[in-house]
Length: 283
Ligand code: AMP
Ligand code: MN
Ligand code: MN
Ligand code: MN
View (cartoon, rainbow, N blue to C red):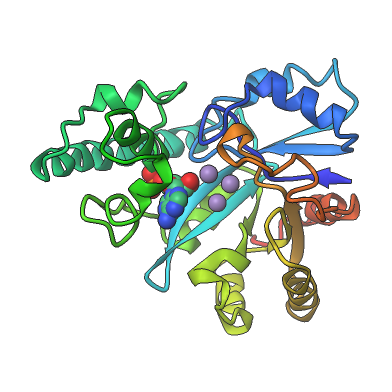
């Protein structure tokens, strides 16, 4: 059993990279990928744990793309963390996020919420701020009863204070991941567009744009979704990935390796991803 999608406090999660590696060991995983959003900052501490745990520690990151007018997440698995060009590209993405967050603070202030960037930063353990931290800041100031309520009209995609982030085109993201020696796969396609989206043609389109595979196994899929995506991968000749999308205390009830309980990602998926990486099929 493996888990190729998880987060630490370097993005939306709550565990340190060291804790995550130990949790992977305790869960009896054979491999565990750390895939924080827009950053590899947790990777050195994560890989430093390799001689203390038997679980194989895998490098990854998660990027946000724009596809069919919506946000689509892409994992870059097996990227080289020493690749300076890729690190610079990630820094650029984080800069775009900071710009957007600054504009969202101004918009909240215009709407009468007395929230500063410092208030938002106070809710985060790392410099990477997301709407999750905005939601916690609004709750801490008493504007909403609990953070989730901030996603009902204020911070959600249709919310009054929402400011969109400039997101990557999928072909650009796939190229960046390839150039860093990794394998680009679509994260949780079964969550796209509310989960009712018909993927067959759209996935073939992403394949033409350089995507190699997608998550056929995911911490929050229903059984029917897993079998649909497994069959789709076979039809298109794409590789499969899978993981829990573990976020620590930020996603209560979701366990590393096991998701909401029924998840079990087979070891062979990692072999398939590594075969893709070696083949370098994008060249
Ligand atoms: P950002 O990357 O700053 O746009 O924030 C994205 C994060 O906000 C996601 O990872 C979710 O954790 C959270 N989020 C976005 N929309 C919602 C929603 N409708 N309900 C709850 N959380 C959400
Ligand atoms: Mn997240
Ligand atoms: Mn995601
Ligand atoms: Mn994720």
